[in-house]
Image 1 (cartoon, helix red, strand yellow):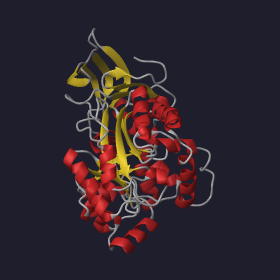
Image 2 (cartoon, helix red, strand yellow; image 1 turned 90 degrees about the horizontal axis):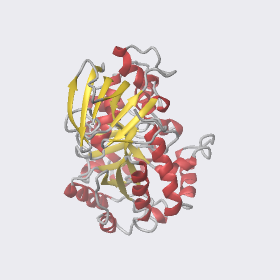
Image 3 (cartoon, one colour; image 1 turned 30 degrees about the horizontal axis):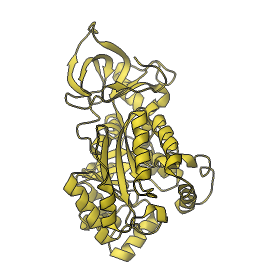
Image 4 (tube, rainbow, N blue to C red; image 1 turned 90 degrees about the vertical axis):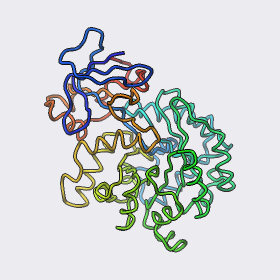
Amino acid sequence: MKLWCELAWLGGDEPAAGVLLTIDGGVLRAITRATERPPDAERLPGLTLPGLANAHSHAFQRALRGRTHGATGSFWTWREQMYALAQTLTPDDYLPLARATFTEMARAGITVVGEFHYLHAGGNAMGEAVIQAAADVGIRLTLIDACYLRGGLDSFRDAGADAWAARVDELRDGELLRIGAAIHSVRAVDFDSMRVVAQWATARGAPLHAHVSEQPAENESCMEENGLTPTMTLAEAGAVSPSFTAVHATHLTDNDVALLGFARVCLCPTTERDLADGIGPARLLREAGAALCTGSDSQAFIDPFEEARAIELDERLATGVRGNHSPAQLLEAATAGGYESLGWPGGGRLAAGAPADLVNVSLDGIALAGTRPEDAIAATVFAAGPRDVRAVMVAGRWLETDGTVP
């Protein structure tokens, strides 16, 4: 298959014009320049991007829409409503809910999702429902199975870290599936068990994620228990490495920022603002060396463009400074940053050897009409939305998004 792109983002601040993509076996085999469309190539108008990555998702929380958004209270009162929802779900309920959530993601341009999974009633039955849902939609999935040992609901918890490892060992990678690990949080996993999970991930070369410093109260309880911040505790347990992703990382010390400079950080601005969690130090983390990525988390709504631009726009509100992150840096977080975090190295790029995952964005819709080619990257990052996604490809196959393909 050959696709000729009017404009394509190959990295940098501006798109390239006249880009020919050669695809075979679900992989981008060659990227060349061609002023005119070859007769054997399909034409992609507008702007073609690498597939967008959602590095942190709780698919079941989509069912909370409307139940919690107008409520007063805090993260902790929201959590009680989330628990109430989780108690009602069965695998048969979860399959159509997850399928709807992943369909919404695909229509928004998301080609890979990291499902941070801790609904463990019935062993792996709930996880298998998530795996089936992603397969039905046709997007890539990294099932980030979370070790959850204390607090929460009985249905979240395994008997211990070894029992968690034995259960997750029953799951297998597939063509569009990776199995990863998570330490749910320092409040949900004791120090010795953190070590077990980190060692499991290291031995398998699997991605490792954890909720980190989402709330000040989390930091305070961790200091009381361990005498260390959550980031420092995870580092002492051997979790912090280039394969580790700290999710949220909102309330950090300077030392935490330095430690996470060796890892990855997933920011979820739409959830963080919905729950009044705060605004994390994204610029400082990036300058320390941390690779950023983005996630929809609670599915307050699903828009990967909004997650990316909110990193910059929220930080402007917090700092009074514009230009903390360039459009290209934000788009990198929404594409390659997420793929790397989820265990798909080389993905999220239009480059030879990368997975043939891409998104075609219309530049002639209401939001982006009149955009100059040289401004297409900035315009897309700061103004585009799911309505502008024209077509989505995963592993060389067009997905059914709005019913049209090129």
